[in-house]
Image (tube, rainbow over all chains, first blue to last red; front, side):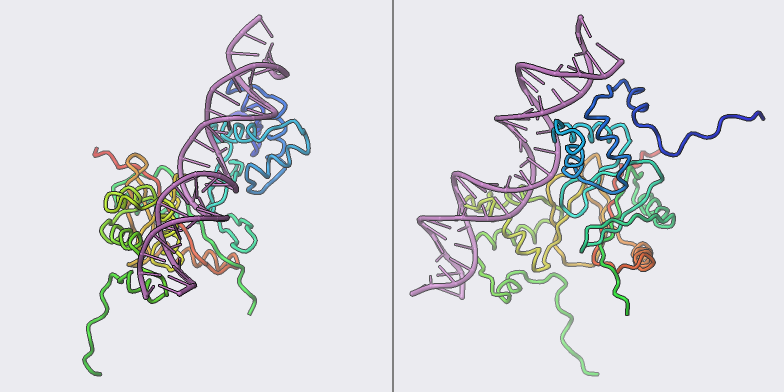
Length: 146
Length: 146
DNA sequence: CTACTTGCAAAGTGTTTGCAGTTGA
DNA sequence: TCAACTGCAAACACTTTGCAAGTAG
């Protein structure tokens, strides 16, 4: 066994990723990518558009939507439809997780449970299905201290 | 302990329910109610509108939407947003259950798991929240027989 | 009778798309 | 260079709403 280079960084370099997919790195895309990298939350398209506009006022909302779709198709981000509002996006670095949405503030807390995952797989199997994807959202409100 | 009347029928009478809420039973409402009672599935507004039109061609899509909202607010039906398409509705008789959606046919299979419910409550508690509602959807495809 | 409902058309959201001009590789 | 990309405005799908006419109780 020989020494080798350290494992790749946990956060992929989207620009490189895109370029390798034969996609051009344009100004609007670089701007949006920068925003996604800097913002840890679950913003919607309008939110991203607002931040992008602050950096480059020429950016259009269409381009935001087109870029989000592009990134989603590449697997670089996930799209969520919490409640019924607009789609909200999240970078797809880490592992799978589910969401708890604070119905009062809209805040999103991420969590994951191997046991729930396992139960879902089991249930799907019993029903004769293979899981392609799933969505688990808990809507709650902060517990008042007694 | 005295003998008493048998438990109420499992399927509530929506007309009575509505009347008791001070809501008028109009022709369109009666038609829609009839369709919901007869159809066991998870139809969307357009689907309900189509079936209603067959019974009473004068019904408008707006009235379908207004009626679904009314019933939802009364707790008589649940509204779901599977994938990203239109809202789909389901009568709220029985117990709580979750959904497995066949991504190829759109078919919806209902299931419920006390263990998953319990795990969710536990997770929410650990995060400091009380659950208000939740949504668990499994998207899958029928397993091919080997 | 008259307040609640309706149908219709118009408005509203969130998102996608056609097109002519722009730009990255 | 020149296909990929963009901004813009128009189109879209789904849903809600204003209003004048209709109707249940």
